Amino acid sequence: LRLMKGPDGLPNGCAVVVMERVRGLNKVLQLANTEVHGQALRVERYKTMSQIVDDATGVHNAAEVFLQNVPHAASETLVRKQMEKFGFVSSVRLLLKEGKPTGTAVVEFERPAGAQKAVEASGKFLITGRRITVDFSKGKLTRDAQQDEQQDLKGIDKVLVSGMGKCTTAGDVQALMGACGAVQEVTMMETRDANGKLQALVKFKAEASVPSALGLIGKAVRGSLIFVQPLRIPARRDHTGKDKKTKLGGKMAERKSSAQDVANQPEKRKAKDKKRRREDAASDGAPQAGEEGSAEKKKRK
Picture: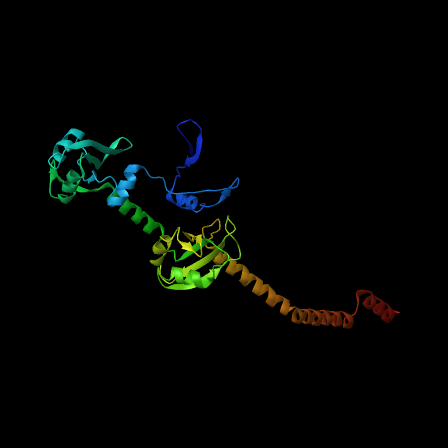
């Protein structure tokens, strides 16, 4: 977090916040128009002048390219020499991981035309016998981010939509999310989000609709900016690693058996009473030890 200051050295009411993850950034963007000390916050992505120009052209740093399959023994001087045939090279940076080469490099040309020529020659030239793949830096990073996101969203078909105003209905959510794919169910939740806004649970018929739904972050619905996030419901497991559902089923079976025992208690009681009566009758019919001794005495007399 860095508070910005004006030419006079005093705070100018602006701040730059760097989040650790993109998801955190999306949540921060949702805080737009939130009142703090009576002032409504204006939140937007931070962009430098070069980034504004890059967004207009659709390419991040159009003069920078990303190289793959670079020989580990190659030096920056060798890479520079091979890439200068496409244009004047401003800088070369070999990417390392834990001090070891990764086979990748970033090359920045003085002009975008040199980078364009290098991308067009991707896979058509060698560096010490290895065929080099070239792409714009933004293209490589964007594809990696998309692949990570798709892998992360595997098995998820539900999203949580928050930030909606009081007038938003399930029909509004259905119409909005229907553009992303077939919606199976929309449930308006009773709980509110951190800003007191309405929330809804949307379940799609196909998992492929979730990435498109996440692209609706910041879209206005009845005057309110919504926030969409994937809903993950991890399987709850016990200490043995088994699903708690199985364990719960066992408990239910135990309860069921105990209920049957209660239902059978009258019959068990009847059987016990009958057995006790038989024992009592047998004991009453048999002569006692004292009585048998007195009868013998009478006979002797």
